[in-house]
Length: 144
Image: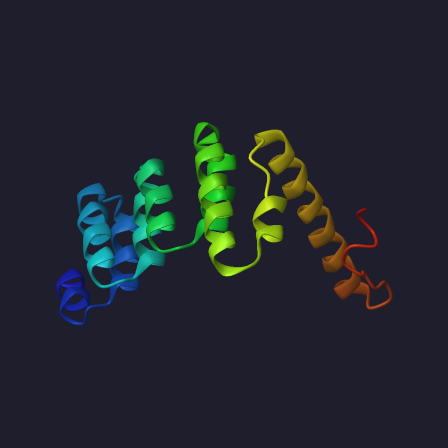
């Protein structure tokens, strides 16, 4: 009955909660398709991720123009796709900005990993600054 009510109300988040708590893989698969149709990419991504369909998750990110997120996902879960996604990211940046930004994006997986690690360091330093209110971080000065 709850499932039927959630479907009638078009409550995709509620269906995600219901299906995931029941371990209903068929329901999650159907929900992924439904979420894509309705443009609810966050729900579709979670469904695909829970089903272990990592390539589909990556494609969904690319299709919804979430290229930086796709690069991070590729780095974490599909390292063989990093070069392709980063090249796509560079091409996308060149359309938006000057050639400078696109050239600054690297295709090397190890260089990308270094950039991500630096970003994580900056994030943790910023979080500690927020927690204590004493330390201020200026982006670019601390990590050159």
